[in-house]
Figure 1 (spheres, one colour):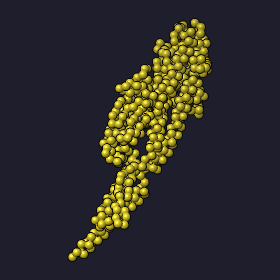
Figure 2 (cartoon, one colour):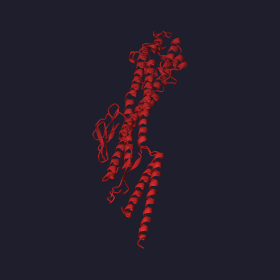
Figure 3 (cartoon, one colour):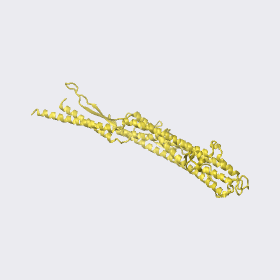
Figure 4 (tube, helix red, strand yellow):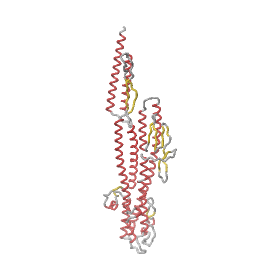
Length: 475
């Protein structure tokens, strides 16, 4: 090899060490960039040249820049991200549902809340306490059936209970509407992510066209957007030879390379039950996980069950109390009036006629016998009656079971979410061990390439001195 050949070798070495320094610096700059995968410069021995002594090396070349990624771990993270998204949205929905009830499980309540606490709820002033107060007021009136003041107290207690039912029903209706809006918002965000992924596919194809290298930074961004999409809905990915990735949901391909073939929409499947389908194809999707599915599951299972149970409880209360009350007689002999109006929790109300004139409350079982209390006693005894419509439970037991079921569902979801976060955390740590930037490692590489650059520069200086000596030989 000539001195000029050696000079070319040193120059190539300078470029190689510089490339290594730039890659290490790029890694250090992105040490806090979420979703970034560390990169490495691929260095290979340059082609040897034949000499009289045999093939002689010509140094080293930087032949590419590759990122450290584990495709299997990435795929698992995408899947587990969808599961976590479902649990998180389900948890939020159930927390709102519990707040709508206005009561939680509390077996320690005492005093005036004792009857409610016995059924597993308490600690707040809600339906359980108002229901207990209503039957206590009936019991008090039975001891003094001609008392106008006791009748006024009964009216107040009945109105308070009806208001509680109405408010909880309104909250649950509002929550259902909010969950539908949340679903629509998730669909909108998913469509944005699909568009972003298609654009990134296009950029990656263009960047990698005609080269052997990879558009590493663009691939990192695309992976992050895929994981964002997976938080919303379970996705299936297929890698293509041109560097792009196809995206499908429930077997329906939505992104093919740089093209968005279809998008999503939330639609009313009937009765306000919003679900998800493809916009152009109109294909209903079974999305299985992601925040969309968590929202749908909570809305159509626990929250729907609460609403149904609440309506059944209110309807049974209306029917049972009215059946007994309508057969009684008021202080002036009136009869046939219902105690409550309405059919369920949304419209239950104290009969306005009785509320305006408490003397019309039909406490007596005998016409003209104003001191008789047989009807109001029967009404008070309804508190301890096991009702067939409530699966042979009392009113308080039925409501307590509703509150307990909500608490158990939320507690179960909390546990599942905690377990899922552990699984995902383990996978993220596993990915970080492969793809994460290590400051110590990058600083070591930086020093290594720096020293290599210095040595290459020294080689050039040495060759320059040798060339000068050769030139001086001719003088």
